[in-house]
Image (tube, rainbow, N blue to C red; front, top):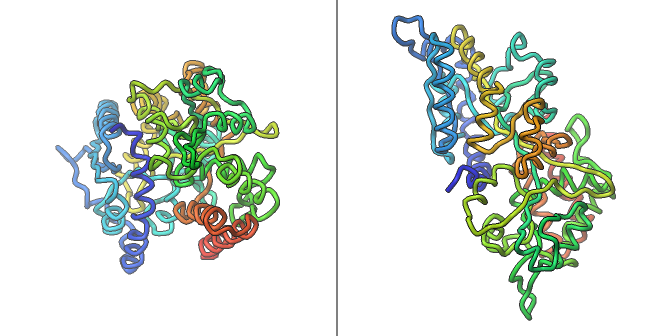
Length: 444
């Protein structure tokens, strides 16, 4: 299994891990005084005492672990007065390990986390703002893609990515040819995508799917396609500019969700959970098209019989849109003194052009800096290129609780498709649930 198969492990963790971590946060609230500082002595120094030791945490996956080990060796060669201890933990245990270790000052100095977890980490006092003298807002906003603003809270950035992700359309060339479609010409518009999907769909005499035209998996990336792509192409937006108000309980939101549910109810081009999940279906050659991230390339390339292509997401009404996400590195709140100086240097290295170029080649995620990502060798690559070009117009949703914000759409689907309630009622209920979440967070 390659690194890119971790998508579903990430989803599992987001759903199962956060209930535990929130409970631990509440239980440990009384220990908040430990964040006040003075914890740097918890970490030992090496050799003659002139070497500053810092600890870096990430969840375990072999490809990422091996690359970070290489980057650490490069960093230490350039900075012989700094030693970086790299520690990893099983993915499913990662957030609970953070919750139990960081408050006591025994955790990492630099930590890798999914950007959608930042509100929880910041509210819990786990992170400190990045120092302006090194990572000024002006520098970040001139060098990085605008989507990294999802890591900015109350005027300060708390973390920065080495790499980012966007979405693209994958299509099975062999299934296209079999359906009488040009295998080298993916759909350029949403209307074309639906037309192609209908030609790619196969059912038995009772209507059961044997092959689906496209993915409808809200548990995976179609949740992002619905909210950040389709809704915007319908003339709407999921949230207000300040992210405090849900803005899809209106005609654009109703139209977008009706369009999406009709792909199953009316157009009959697919269904959720077909062949268990969209990745399994596409890999097995029983799904014509899917929407997924650049992290999926390694998984698909490992299937020698799969003949596929990658294209930018189809446009609608002349509008292009995309969703982006990222894992970022932040500095823990108790890191001070020499350890803070060393941590800042290490974070600078992790966000350097050198590290980003290596990450693209060895992990498969995209450079977070605009100038590097837009180099011709990357931008015009037949597989990476569509994702990189999509970053130019991508939005990274500023999640408060990604699990809840995903689940409102899954529940809305069930209400319409399984229970027969109206699209308007389902979308209004989703908006009400999500607005309550936003109000509870921003009113604190």
